[in-house]
Length: 244
Image (tube, rainbow, N blue to C red; front, side):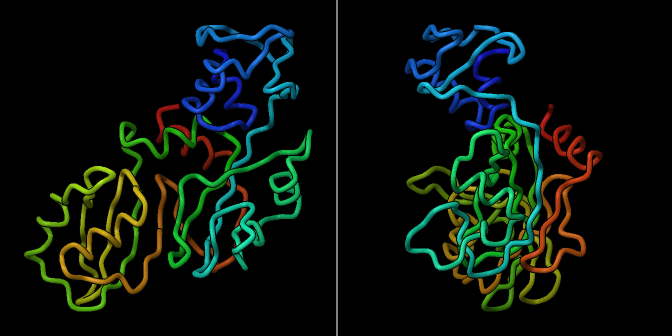
């Protein structure tokens, strides 16, 4: 496999991020600095290191958590009283927080802000994480939103067309009313607090926001704070949705 793909497989991050590591000269193969992104490597034959630390191919881990309101999506934050890592199995928490060698480290796929709830995927599969978040691969995410006032159907076209902000175009893909104040909303690309910002632009405040699906993965019967490892079938379907 190509060097950046190998680094992503080892859990260093997305393939694009790993390409930067290679170009910057932070990666060695068999003791020699490699900057060629086309370099083919094999963990069973080559010694691959990042900033002097030898890497190993990690078994792929896919975990889904029903994030409760009030938890921050971070591994280490001195100012956060509650983080999602407080809710993970101990072996995942220890490896991720301490960077323990030989153990599987997982990272969140995207973010849910502190006041939002619902599906949060965590994995060590850097390439999958990159594709799930990139709009090119059209992986749908659905949210259940409660507004502070009744939804006016004539505003549907406005939130779908969106508006330009400092970080690009902010818009919603689909809006489906459930009741006067509750909606189902679809996103493909998620910028920071995108749903809240779009509704605020057009005169609404989001009272509650819950992600109920991420590609083929549904919230199902997971209670707030509960999580589980994906089944082999689910992980294959998730990778298929991302074109892998």
